[in-house]
Length: 492
Image 1: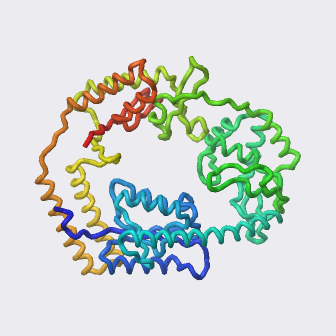
Image 2: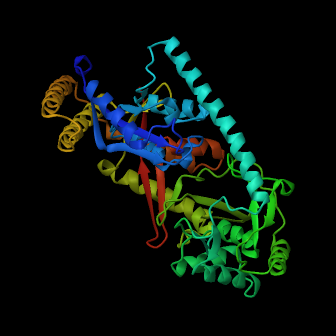
Image 3: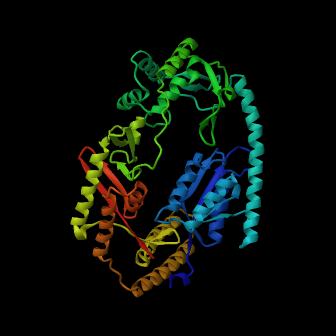
């Protein structure tokens, strides 16, 4: 059996440096330590599997692009590595809550996090030591954050600049004062369209997107992007700070904001800026509470063919309900996918009929359900492991070509992979053949069709039934097509 063969582990390395302080090893120094550890412990580490976040804090994972890229790959079906190597656990995360969440997520995908400078024993005692290290790292981070916060507050009160500059400005490196750039004309257009032409945030966003303009981050303009620009006093010569809770992205109360006179050139007078704020207040629509009750059974499962976002349900009144792309309603998708509820339901019912009528041509993914987790059956699992061995061979060859492994290490790794392949192939031959009965599959889909077309069944029941056989549905408005992507959950 494959489990009796000594498998060569595949690793990735994660390196993070947040400051230029001496107590932090440089990225190159961390890299050398991790490569040396991999070699000494018979672990394959490729140059492509080394992820570096330089000059980035470890408090929030979603602010570390290379970290999130690594996590995404670790969760993927290909399972490109078995271990995440770090110099210290503090490089993985300084927030203990996030550390536990991401380590647990990796553990579920059979990926371990190993600190090469903080070896741990197996068992409960090792876990306790790991938690103590995490607590110490977080305590250090909190103390440092408090000192930084006090310094930034003082700087903001003096009109200093300490955040990303808004569109229309770049920093003058000679004097440290923001100066206007060629994007300032876009800001002037936005204010003019809102003030003189009476355009809404959404109309302005679509206009700019159609003209090929993009935000500072290179994204499509959205409703909220335009709103932020129109409400930003920076364009009137002010510096605003401490407006947002960065942990949950909520806006703080106005008395907590710091607004001071800046030294940069204003694009508009403060009087004109206040005029724009008055217009914003006058045009704001009164808040309407959402109708209570369960959302429609199609909510969240129907996707836009243009951008992949979900189609959200809109209820103008009880007799006029429709779906549309949520990104289109924000201004970041260029194609409307408007469709009435009645027409969408009819199209999906017809797609179910067509799927049942096509018999053997139903496309689906078979999964088994056990302990609330989805795992593929043994045949699929073994074939995927064999495919992974092909990738491993490419990786060890790449490691040798990159100079990470010696020729002796390369030969030994090839021998281990060959043994593992033979064991998997033998195990695959000994499995009993299993063919799904298409009649059972059609019966399952037919049962769901009966449930979703019944008027006396509630939304929650219909939603659960639909999701038992359907992964997602794509609506293509241009071609007037509905595509249903089926899978079948099969009890173990």
